[in-house]
Image: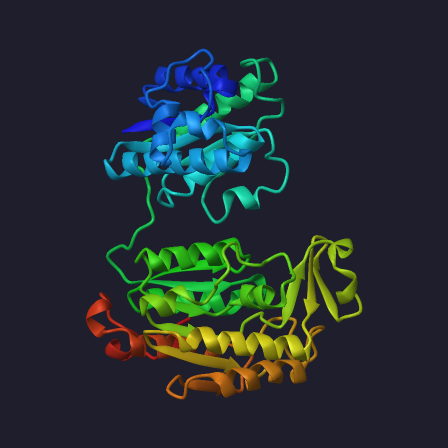
Length: 423
């Protein structure tokens, strides 16, 4: 398998040639893909710009005359198609890309088309800015170039390029990792620091029951990555302990909005079991104090740290979130259960906490239960979300959905051990 070097060779050809030499000196086969528009500078690619344009559904001459955004979209589409083909042919060990603003857009869009877990690295002039629009929920490692990628390696850029090559050499040593379903059923759990005690206990319980568990931080990108893995068939069930991003998606504010709109849809579409809890749905996340929009500044706020402010949602917002949550769960083709911790949805949202507002919480519950399909059960537990018995009950309900033959080790029920007895 080869490392793919992906860049626009008309502007980054000499830097690409330097990387190729570094990789080949370490024994890594290299395939160079040219996503540029004009004659390469200092290197001949294995896959030309003509090939990339054709894979994007156009000929290069017509692409050159298009508006810039369409040029980027076409070449990114073609480069992504080429990467997928190399991956499907088991020829791709990893991808190392170079880019300025436009090259970064092409390289990242192409990298997002290949499997999560397969090594991806980008050296970019814009890496010190907001990279979320480029990376999305992909596992792209990014290295800031410090200097501009122009005119070939120089004393500023060369050490960065050499480090990037060394990183890719390390990432492609041995077996290339890809995320896939293993021998045990994999359960996804969404979490934030505010619900971590419950998530930690759930992970332990599930592993004791013979399953694998993976936590996804409800920061927007992780939740979207989880949805992607559900669609890919890598996840057997979901405990939506902390579907926080749905609140920010519905309210249209906050820093943790999902990378791809549509949280709490994939599991229902695929038909895998879901246990859904309103963990951390009662607030919006922002950054430092000055990042909070003026319309939210009079609300109860807790500063998780100097760079993370939790701002309480209103009753009207909670009612709207509950309605959307019900609408999405109602689409589910598989088993769903809702579990409500009536003594608080987060560390700060329980009685006595700075974000405690039982009337606003009740607005979500009322809206949700009024709109939810009758056959979807709702369990109201007189517990805080982080109380150990609450985590125990979530696991018990999930195990009721899973066929016994899918659980390879003895479950607590089959072994005579009750979930509440597992430390």
